[in-house]
Every structure is written in C-alpha cells, then in structure tokens.
Amino acid sequence: MGLESGLPVDGFLTTSLSRLVNWARRSAVWPMPFATACCGIELMATASSRFDLARFGAEVFRFSPRQADLLIVAGRVPVKILPVLQRIYVQMCEPKWVISMGACASTGGVFDTYAVVQGIDQYMPVDVYVPGCPPRPEMLIEGIMAIQRIIDEDGIPKSSEGRRVPLRLELEPTYEPQAQPVDVSIGAT
Ligand code: SF4
Image 1 (spheres, rainbow, N blue to C red):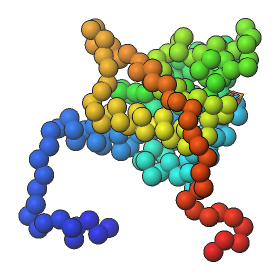
Image 2 (cartoon, rainbow, N blue to C red; image 1 turned 30 degrees about the horizontal axis):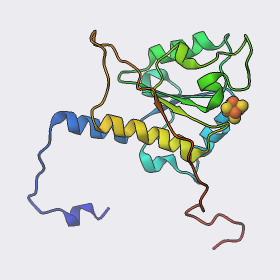
Image 3 (tube, rainbow, N blue to C red; image 1 turned 180 degrees about the vertical axis):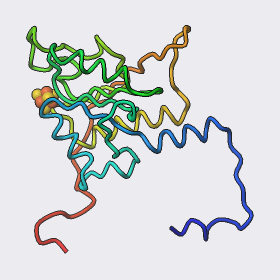
Image 4 (cartoon, rainbow, N blue to C red; image 1 turned 120 degrees about the vertical axis):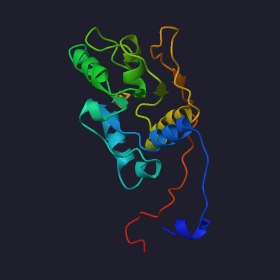
C-alpha cells in the first residue's frame, strides 16, 4: 500500500490502550439497518458506490444485532413494530449507538396518528438525529462521522450508575448540493 516505504525501518509508536481501542472502534463501525420506509432507500444509497460509506469504514451492515454497534432507524416506526426494534437494540453489543434518520423516526413526521411512534427517543436512547424527509446520504454520513468523532474523543457518556446515556446531537440541515466528485453521467470516460 506504500505505507511501509514511508516508515522508518525500526520505528515505533507510543499511545494509550484506550486511544488504540477507540481508533479501532471508530474505524470499523458496524451498522444495523432498521429501515421501514422511504428513508431506507437513502440508507441503501449511502452504502452504494456513489456515496461509498466504505470510505469511513462503516459499510459492513450486519443483520445480526449481536454483531452490530450502530443502530440506524430509517423510516416511520409503527407501534406494532416497536417491541421488535427494542429487542434488537437490547441485543446489540456495547458500546452501541443509535441514529434516528429522518423526520418520521425522530418525530413521527407527517404521520400524526395513534398507530405511529411519535419519536423513537421516547423508547430508546438516540445519539444523533439526522434531519430531512428523506435526509440525503451526505447528511447520514455526517451523522455517522459525528459518532466517530465522539468515539475518537472517548466521549461515551455514562450516568452516575454507570449506565449509558444518549448524546442527543441534532445535525443542522445545512447541506448545500454540490457536484459529485465522480462524473457518473452516461458516456463519461
Ligand atoms: S422522513 Fe420522509 S422519506 Fe423518511 S420515512 Fe418519513 S416520509 Fe419517508
């Protein structure tokens, strides 16, 4: 990869164990997708080649909660499905993180009805709220990077009883559309 040639022959690094662990943890976030509606399509796009979530080490979507540490709730959550979502959250390994993607997951969105949960944060801790209807993939990537920064800084908040408390970060909906870095138009060379 060219890395070895840049390193001194007998070089060494010193660091703390926690920094090393956090570096590994933030470089290999494994998301658990819980996509119930249209936001799920943007979630799929985020992992695809155009947006390439692999650049941030978080593209390995796991469908087993025991092998995932980032729950991404994308779409509205009907009351009937809520126990399933909660069970998945409980089964995920620690430390774990939760992103509420889109207006429906965060507030119920336009579905102001008794059958739809009016914000998943009433039933589980949410670390990052990603705004939009739907949020663009770039916005979701912002949310994942926010969690990576917190992991980097060893900022896993705990209550006095040692229990994990939610971060409740709200991303600003300030995304401005820009040209994609790669020309994907038909016929491009
Ligand atoms: S926030 Fe909008 S795009 Fe996302 S699930 Fe709700 S209606 Fe669909």
